[in-house]
Amino acid sequence: MNITLSVDERIAEEARKTAQAMGKSLNQAVRDYLEQLASRQQLTAELQSFEASALASPGRHAGWVFDREAANERR
Image (cartoon, rainbow, N blue to C red; front, side, top):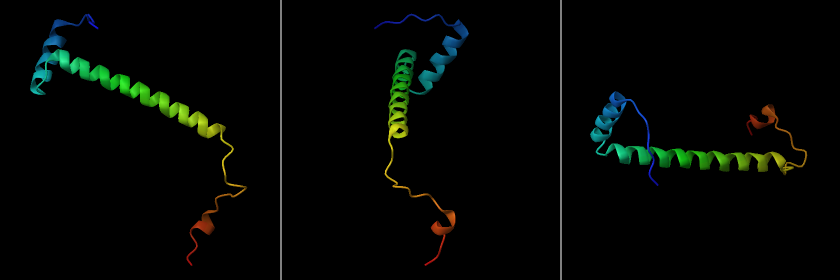
C-alpha cells in the first residue's frame, strides 16, 4: 500500500538525516515505525482480552486470603 503524507520540509529533511544515520531510508524508517505501532496495538488488545478473562474467572483460591504475617514467618 502506498501512503502519501504531508510533512513540513524541514522535518522531512531532519527525519531523512536521522534515518540515514540509522542506516535506513526514510521510507524504511516509516515502515518500521508503522510495524511497531501495529504490533503495539495487537499486544494491547491481547492484554485487554487476558485481563477481561482473568477478572471474569472465579479463581481457585478456595477462600484462602493472603496474610502478610504468616507469609513472613520463619520456620
